Image (cartoon, rainbow, N blue to C red):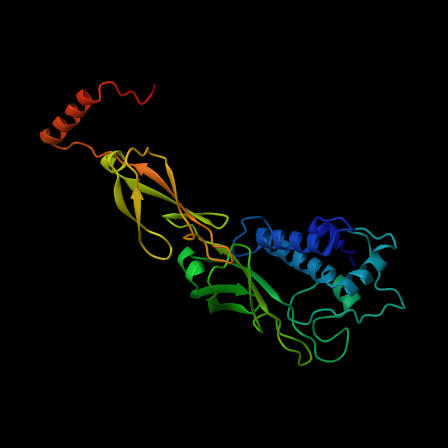
Length: 294
């Protein structure tokens, strides 16, 4: 059988930290996930990445693998099986993941090899997108997932103020266990969907607010949407388009809430009749000394 260089599969060095290995796994799992990837052979690459992470994520299992690798093996070399004194009780996952013969020769097969007794199933990882309003206020959202357990729909509770990259753990929703062991967990990594009005910058929420020329010229009180509802904002007389105004504490919730940054966007109405054109002509004469390009 072929020796698997799991470090090479994840694109990390043998001395990589656990955090570096986890980061590489998450990046590659997103890249090759069959539901979203357009890469060729994405499903096979996704399986290889999962297997490599399974071998390296647990310190004892990684140490055992490193001992074998220290024998001079490299990816693609012929591997004739574990050494005679090899202890297969390295905590291989149960579950129904399709691991290679190489993995199973070291850590035991998924059907009950390896250590005796019940074993918890593998955790399942997936990426989901949450709309901005639900992520802000919290609530429940439905997701459809296709994984080793088939296609299913889950209704998930979203905590208020969740941020991109945070994870939600659903106990018992991962791969099945072995020998009567409990199922693994489903770990959802959360991303935020684009919103037609609001943008995120750290914990600040950004909004472009359309205003009229007379509102910025004369000053006005205008209604501004926020994720928590509408508020009134006083626009000072003589404001320019592009002016930024801050609504403190109206951004993303948290121990220190962010602010909402409102950028004034002047919209100029088009004249559609003689009366409106006459007003613009009067303005051009009245403000003849004004040059916006000076």
